[in-house]
Length: 202
Image (tube, rainbow, N blue to C red; front, side, top):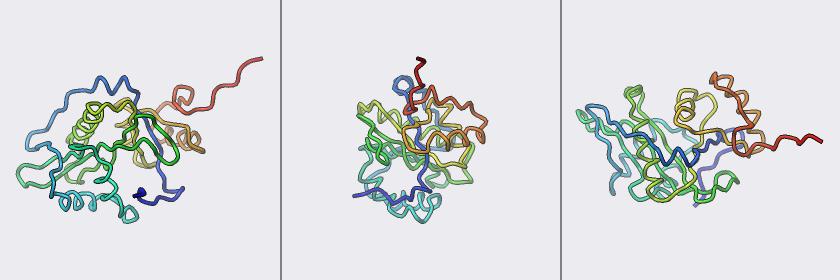
């Protein structure tokens, strides 16, 4: 099955996590009144309902794509205990390829979502760390995630976790330069993977 169709204009930017960060993940902390657990068989409808509150209409194939590529025990849900409502999620996927890029032994983070009324409580961060730990446990060495320009808060979170922009895609360096300005983050293409080598002096 092919991934959900994205046009070139709508395709996000790619970030990668250096392996050293994957080996030294912080401890997962779950806020009071929440439970962190993996998606169980038969809960696909619950998961789809959560995704549909946060995923745009053109990504209708995202549920089936995720279920086909998720690691066993790789889809994490943060449940609000008083209501039983899934409030946040993140998934660990087997996905060594991304838009023509090949990441050897590569996995991906996907569907990092949180309901608006549950934001700013560390829920997605806990789900993210759990998904990264699952990828590391499964032996993955390279992890990437796609981010959307304009989503400054989530992208800044990835940067603070140790993710770095990947520049090995046509046009990525220019887009990251503009995005870093919006993020108020240093633009350092010489330190990021996929950048063109600096010209050698004669």
